[in-house]
Image 1 (cartoon, rainbow, N blue to C red):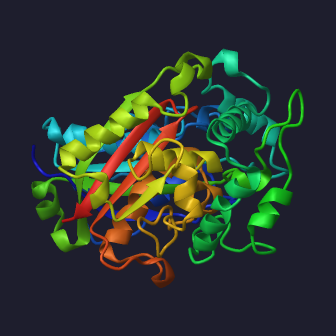
Image 2: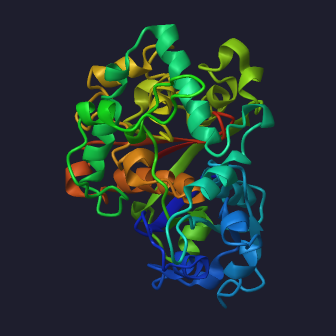
Length: 400
C-alpha cells in the first residue's frame, strides 16, 4: 500500500462561539493557514457536521465548501456517523487516494452547538444527540449521559471501583487543557481537583442513582478542525516537505450493534472498537508497547478508562488503575489526552475526530505548547468513537 501523509492541520478555538456561523467556519477551515499552497490542487474533500441539519437547518455542507472558488466543482462528500464522523472524514480522504481518486484530500469537521443569540438550549442538543442511540436506550432529553452513566455504574460494580477513584481522571485532562490555549476549558474559575469532581452535580438520581457527575462529562462546544491528506505525489505537488508531515501508518474502523443491551456481557469489552484498533495497529506494524501517547474519546470519564483497555495499555478492569497509578499523565508510561481531551479541550461533535488526529500530528512534529510537548514521541494513536461505544475509528501516526 502506498504511504499516506497528514499535513497542514489547523483548528479554531473550541468553546462558546455564538457569533461564528457554519458558513464562516467552513470558509476558514478551507483557507486558514493554506495561503502558501495552491488549494486548487485538492482533489477530494470530506466534510462532516453531525448536528448541522438539526441545529442549523443545513444538511448539504458539501455545497457550502464549494462556495470557495478553489473548491468549486471538486469531489466533495458529506460524511456523518455520530461522534466519530471526524475520524471517518480523514479515513474517507485516505481511502479515496488509495483508490486512485487523486493525490490530495481535505478533511473538515465542524459543529455549531451554541445559538447565535440567547441561551444554550441543552435540551434541544440532548434530544439531537439522542438520535444517534437506539430507541431502547432513549432517556429524553439526555440519552447519552444516561447511557454512559449506566456503563460507568456497571464498570464500578464489576471491577470494584469507587466514585472517588474515578474522580482522578478529569483533573488530569483539565490540567492539560490549562496549557492549551485553544481548549474550551483553558481557563476555569477554580482548579478541578478530585474533590471538586466528587462534589459536582450528579446527573441522575431518578429512577436510580447513577455515579456520573458534571465534571466527568465532555463539553458542549463550537469549533472546526481540518487536515490535509496526501500521498507522495500530493506532497510534491503542494511543495510540502516530509518534515512537515506525519505518516498515517495505520487506520481501522468497525461498528458494533447499536443497542446497549445487545452487547450483553461484552459491553465493557467492545468487540468492534477492539477490531478497529487491531486493524490499525496491524497495518502500521506496531504493538501497544510502541505507542508513545494516545488521544482517546473521553466523552465521559469512564470511556477514558475503557479506552486504555481497548488499546492494550491495560487488561480488562485495569483501565482506571492505569490512571490511578499515574501512567496517563504527561510524565507517565503513555500519556493520554495531552490536548485536554473532550472533557476539557472540548467536544464540537464532528470536529472532534479531526482535532484528535491533528493534535497527534502536531505532537509528533513538536508543534504543541511547550508544557504539553512530549520528548521523543515517535508513534501516536487516536481512538474516536460514535454512539454508545458503537462505531469506532482508530488511527496510527508516526513521523514521516
